[in-house]
Amino acid sequence: MTDNIKHVAIIMDGNGRWATSKGLPRSAGHKKGAETLRQILETAADMKIPYITLYAFSTENWQRDKAEVDYLMGLLRQYLNSEIKEIEDRGARILFIGEREMLANDIIVKMSELERRTKNNKDFTLCIALSYGSRAEIVAAAKKAAILVAEGELKVNDIDEKTFSNLLYTAGIPDPDLVIRTSGEQRISNYLLWQIAYSELYFTKTLWPDFSAEEFKAIISDFNSRERRYGKV
Ligand code: IPE
Ligand code: IPE
Ligand code: MG
Image (cartoon, rainbow, N blue to C red; front, side):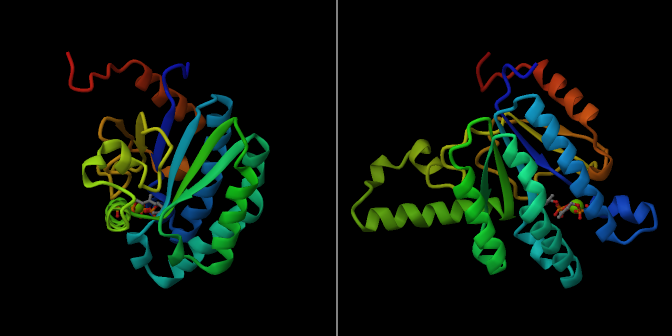
């Protein structure tokens, strides 16, 4: 089933609306969303999809109310301290992309520790976009290129798409084949702009807390029926 799919990137959206529609605080949506995440990762591991990238928190999400940001950081801590173990035990290599210096110190330490501990795992790669913004990533890559040129380690004429890709947070990770966004919003919200140049996009109205393994599998089947042309005929 997953012969031709290597990388699925997910925008997990709609937690707040899910909670509001049930008369609950937004935090309840985030909590339920974390349960959905556990299910979807299990399913992706069963399906042997080699790379999964999750949009967990954007650079723009720092502008939300402090109480909501604090709640999300608490959930993240809990996730990194215990729940991620399940996925680690399934042979996942865990990576983080984003501006990690914005995060609390204990979280940064935990992230590096997980990356170190899982770096030789081969079954699949779980990449978590945390405090991530694509434009910031591209600007950071441009700065790295400028520094390498200034230091004489890179020639301007050697800057091509491949060299540039290798300066992004996602260096070494193949581009997503498919991007799934839940919650009905049909936008990218500063996610992997460079990397999704030729990705297939799938938007579902389902809110993230209601997203299921069945729907995930159906979306992968839909992807498998699409014809990708890359500008050719
Ligand atoms: C996605 O759900 C989770 C994060 C962005 C952290 P939202 O919190 O954006 O939920 P809605 O879009 O307000 O419903
Ligand atoms: C995108 O969702 C970020 C994450 C899912 C982490 P948002 O809810 O922040 O996006 P907008 O504000 O609707 O574009
Ligand atoms: Mg949202």
